[in-house]
Length: 168
Image (cartoon, rainbow, N blue to C red; front, top):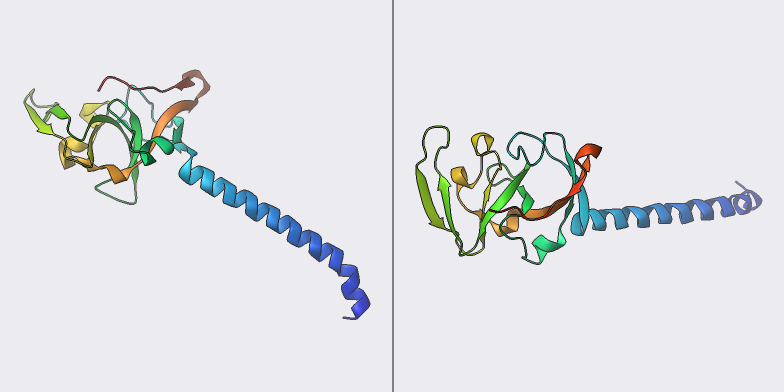
């Protein structure tokens, strides 16, 4: 290639690099926003019925969990303590120091057990206790596994609503 040809291509190369930098900046912003601020999640499975249906899309925020402010009644997305490759949706029933009573096996009896949630942990349960693997099965969950708090149902449109705390 001659020098003249390179000079002809220079504006195009410069514009391509400029556009690539814009796309990279946008992707970095989306990554930071999704990881540290707010993200969309699709809820799968029956454990949170009737509060959330299978296939519901929600908005979650990560600020509350990062500040250690998730509390009883919050619906949260957590990293599964049984399979770290999965995330699950549950309701916080107790935080460190809370006394929590729960039914051992609701499908077989009303026998209850009471525990005090240890420091640095939360007690989580699905709203549908008959179809949920939760703290009743694996015990208190380290707070570090809490990823975000659900604050808005966005899909399907007929279920659109904000989510506050529910009595734990």
